[in-house]
Length: 203
Image (cartoon, rainbow, N blue to C red; front, side):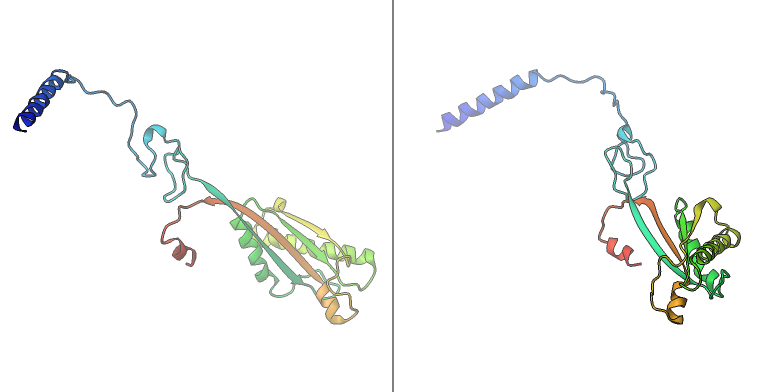
């Protein structure tokens, strides 16, 4: 048994000796061709980076570019008018502030102002009255809130789109209105989910 162990040991030493003879020492270091540093700490090395200043926490692609996603939002505003009048009622400008804030939030969005009347008087007269009401809103947005004129369009519908068809003063008051419809879209950074994401959404 001892002879067998001795033979194995000698054979192993012989192999080590043979292997040692085949080692080649490198006299110079291999030059690193690519910059493997990650300057913006997004997990993508400099050699592959195409977006040097990625928004922190963004979902990124293979080239270190942050991903974006669209957010859609819309609002509706209902403003009333007195009978046979295109004059803004007290408090209307305060209500328009909601529209102004929306337009400022979405600089590429535009607004369409719809004028409507009650079914009192002729169709021709009410058509013109509804247009004057829509134009009054447009004028307020442009002159009072500095909204660019090319962002506002107006349409007068007369009494062609009644919301209440009964012949009562309450119905007429409900139908004398301005409807403002807006929708906007913006691109925001698509962020990586973390354990704190839910807390951030609730703030």
